[in-house]
Amino acid sequence: MRLDWRLTDFDTRTLVQATRTLGRNLGISGEGRLRLDEWL
Image (cartoon, rainbow, N blue to C red; front, side, top):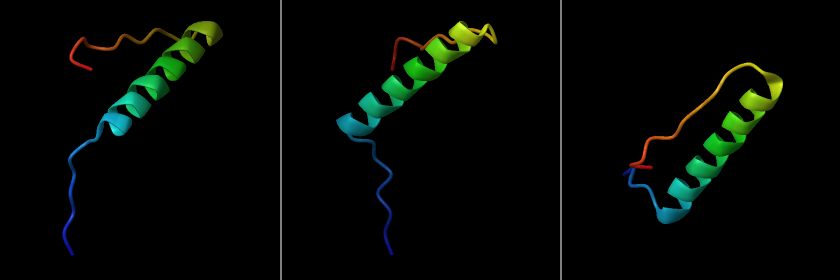
């Protein structure tokens, strides 16, 4: 078996969107804030 762990553009976009959603929900609930690094 061989695994290819390279991320595709789709993987990156999905990760960014999920992180933004998490950050938005943290802010709405008052639980905290989340900031994405620029490299993402």
